[in-house]
Length: 542
Image (cartoon, rainbow, N blue to C red; front, top):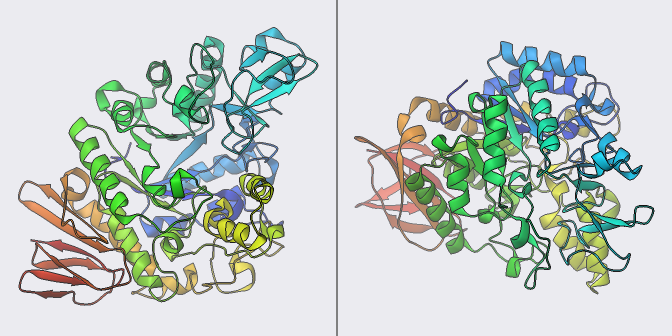
């Protein structure tokens, strides 16, 4: 197993990565065809979002069979070929395990609906009148988290889409079924796993209304979650694999517990607090300018706190559920290259394991779709209707979708400047954005000053410098608009300074030698002060 502290993970959303057969949908053979690109980037693992059999109501996060391949992505033989070819290049595969819920099309749920008591106990069913849900909890995708089944005269819990029924982890039989899924893929050679919203798997002993919110405080980081993760790891040998848990609305204290090596639960965690700093009043669909002071404070709290507690972070800006960071926190027009590089520098040199989402290394931007007919995401379409019902204007709704829709990250990977960006010879399942066509792999591979070349140097630097993988972290320079920190290991020190604004800002600086600069030229240093140009990021060494 590669040292995950020195590793970099490249996330692929297969549906949008590379289409090998011209049907407009990316597939596993398409991923295999691009393995050399990922090797050249320097990534050690590929995290693949789910390619299992699924009705695709939530783009594969509604799994109907954990041990079968969805035909749109290929066959089991294609998955096995991908594993073999990745291994030849020294790349491990990280599979995405959606263990909080299954699709309602899963055989287990279908047998539950047919009245089999054994399988009803695989899920969370509650008896009740058709007009009285068991609790007031809300689905993450809008509306009640409960769905009534008239023929059973029962409600089932779905914290996400109505087609995603929550599993009952309190049932030992469910836990055994899921252990067998892990063993199945381990046997095929998979050595890394990502667990979707895994801190939601343990539900409360008593289901009750949440008097102050949407229910998340009732089921997040539940009573047996650590116990269940320890059991899963112990019984499957997961401690020999690299594992990461996606954490929904979690706490620092829990993430330390999840990732502390002696607890034998997970290698690292994804937490999302730093990606809510532009949510007005905590509402994803209400826009505000990013609160940069809050962003710095959150990084300082989580970075320094995880170090003090012995935990480990997954470092990321982007994934399949988040808008493109260069559009969100950078300037994707005037300072496109500079801000994309600064954002990469800022996150990659922190304490943790960096994740690069497909196209992030090219500076791909938000889609800026102007018509609701261009959107595909179930959450976006649900909220389009909800926002209409709230009386918002069409222009306001579309502005929110342009900023927040998960489809922003799901547009086709831009391989070249040709038709459909080289993603497919057919009609792509979702439109290719027209903006920033120069953000493509073919053009950037030829340019030493490109965003792609910058990412390659960053990834190389992590493998060369022990201080990045192993060093302490301390946040410095409390200047508005600036995020700065020092990494220290023995006598080795790196200082990182990042300007998140469109203005030049002078700061006191440490270090004599520039390791990396998002401006690709000599930084402006004089009398112990560093002038950071708009969206400039600099790493300095003693």
